[in-house]
Structure formats: structure tokens, C-alpha cells
Amino acid sequence: MFETTYFLRFIDATTRRNVEQLVLWFSPCEPFELPHCLVTCESLQVLKLNLCGYILELPNHNHLGGFRQLKLLHLCNVELLDGHLTSCFFSECLLLEKLELCDCNLQHMNLLYIASKSLLYLTFDEGNYYDNCEITISCPALKFLTYKSPMPKDIVINNLFSIEYVNINLNDYDRNCDDDFGEKTGILVHNMFKEIVPSISLLKLCKASLKSLYKEACLSPICFNKLKSLKLKLGVDEDCMQVMIRLLKYSLNLEVLKLWCDEVRLFICEVM
Image 1 (tube, one colour):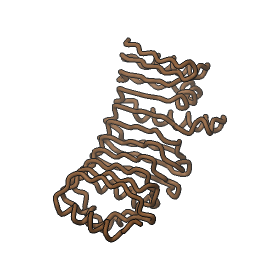
Image 2 (cartoon, helix red, strand yellow):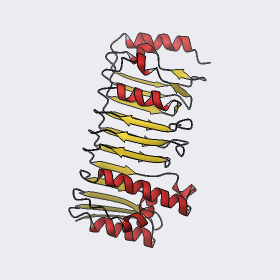
Image 3 (cartoon, helix red, strand yellow):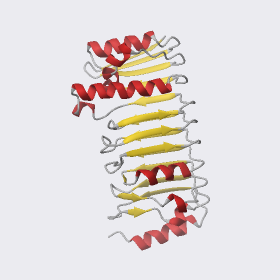
Image 4 (tube, helix red, strand yellow):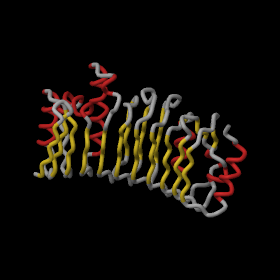
């Protein structure tokens, strides 16, 4: 049985020894609240936390004065409940450079707002119950955005002035491949593109995002003037081919094109 008191004493003892990196992987069998001694640890720079699917309770932001040195936060297999506290928690990590949300459950959240002046890397990997949650990202220093999760209710992007690398892989498309879902996906991805165009140099797209872009790309083409590398996972159908052609047409400075096709197990790498 998980002994909460013993574990909290262990964390307290660890934080008193000027720890810089801490990896916690355990099953609390109940909601787990980040202890105050951990949040206020002056030396901690890397925190990786896996709760085996249990709820992570975050401290009230009015009493949060810690994580002053934290640069990497990796949350894996946790359930997040309060969108407001979660957003405040991320924004209070003033030196945070890398945020990774892996296999997280957003079932009870309507809005996840990530605003940070220091964040450089943002990763969504796998996860559950994204369909009712709107994700808003406002990170002017962000350079790398990786989204390999189910499609959320919406993704709103603001102030991504420094973005260079974008990887979009909607991993629930095959389970929701009707016309309405495809149209919604196309609008969402197209709106993302309109915000990241000025500075992006490397773009990776999955088959779902590529195929669903056809209608939007025809109505409103986007020029990727700084794009150097394009990696596409595509299907052998007219929509995918047409979107790829349009992307190539409006990527005037493209140097590298990589294509992967599941249907024929074909990988092509061309330097242009």
C-alpha cells in the first residue's frame, strides 16, 4: 500500500539536499497534491512526475511562490482537474523552458491556457478526453511545438513570434473520420498555420491534418516563405496529393521534402 506520509517525508528530505533533478513515478491510489516543500524548492530545475493515471492537485496560485529555477516539467499519466489552477501553475514557473504533457487526462477541463514568456519547447503526447477542452497557447519565445494527441475542441495560438518547428499528429483521426470531423480538423489546422507562418522553418504533418486541409487550402492559400524542411505522412488519394502540391507551390525556399505513405510502405527523402 502506498504510504503517503512516508513518501512526503522522502520528498521533504530530498528537497533539503539542493536537488536539481527529481523523477517521481508512483501510484498514489488517491488524488496527489504537490507538497509545498517541492513547489518552493529553490534548487529544482527538472521535475518529471508520473502518477499512473491518478489526479494531480495543484496548489492555489495565490500561495504559490516557488519553482523559481524549474526549467523542465514533464507530466505523464496524470489527470488534471482545474483549468484555472493548471494555467496559473504553468505561468508561475518563470524560468520554464520545456513543458511536456504525456498521456494526460483532460476530461474535466474546458480550457487549458498555457502562457509563458520563457517557454521554448511544448509537447503534447498521447492523452485522453481532449474533445471538450480548448487549448490556448501564448508563448512569444516558443520555438518547438509538438502535438501528437487527440484533436481538442479547439487550439488557439497567440504571440508565437519565434516558432521554428511544428509537428502535428492527430492520433484519433482514424476513429473519427467522418466528414464533419474532417472539416473541423481542416479549419483548426489552417487557423494554426495562419499564426505560425512568419517564422516556421520545419513542418511535420500527419495524414489526418494533411487530408483535412484540402478545402481550406483551396479557399485560402498560405505562403511559407521561411520553410526549409517539410515532412508529410500522406495517403494515396486526390485530397492529400492536392494539398501537398499546394504546400510545395507556396514554400518557395524549401530545401528538404520527406514523404511517408502507409498504404505502400514507401519512404522518400529528397533534397531540393
